[in-house]
Amino acid sequence: AVVSTQSTGERNHNRDRDHKKDSHESEQNTVSSIQDNQATSLRHQIESNTYECMVCYDTMNAFCATYSCFQCYNIFHLTCIRQWASSKLTDNTLPEDATADWRCPACQVSSTSLPYRYFCFCGSVVNPEYKSFILPHSCGEKCTRVKDSCSH
Image (cartoon, rainbow, N blue to C red; front, top):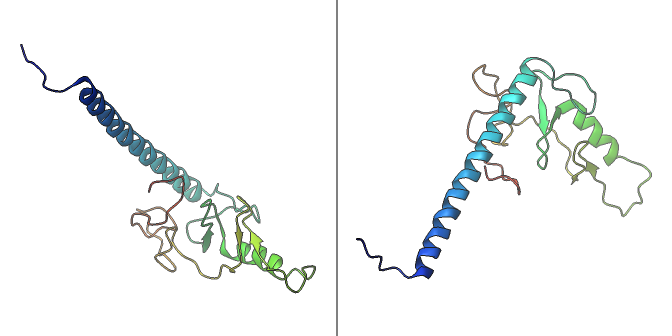
C-alpha cells in the first residue's frame, strides 16, 4: 500500500490548484473557440456581402476601407464613420467650452478623435491588403488589441 505524506490540507490545496489550472485552460480554449467562430462568421458575412455597416446599412465587402471600434470591435465603412463622427464633432449647439465627442453607433463609447485612416483590426497595419486566405480587413497576425473582457 502507498502511504501519502501529504496532509489533508495539502491534498486539498493541490486539488484546488489543479482544478483552477484545468478551469483556466478550459476558459482559454472556450475564448479561442469563440474568437475562431467570430472570425469565421465575420469572414463569411463579409465575403458573402451580408455584413452591414450600422451607419448606412449597406453591405460591406472585403475591399472597402473600414473602421473598427476600439471598444466593441464592430466595423463600419471608413467614410460612413467619418461622416458620423464629423457631424457630432461639429455640432453647433454645443457650448464653446464643451468637449466635442462622438459615440460609436454600436456601443456608444465616446471618442474625441476623428477616424481618418484605414487600419487592420489590431491597428498595426495601415491599409491592409486583401488576401483571400486571411480574414478581410486583417493583417493576418495575432491581434494585439486588449479588451477588458477578452484574453486575446
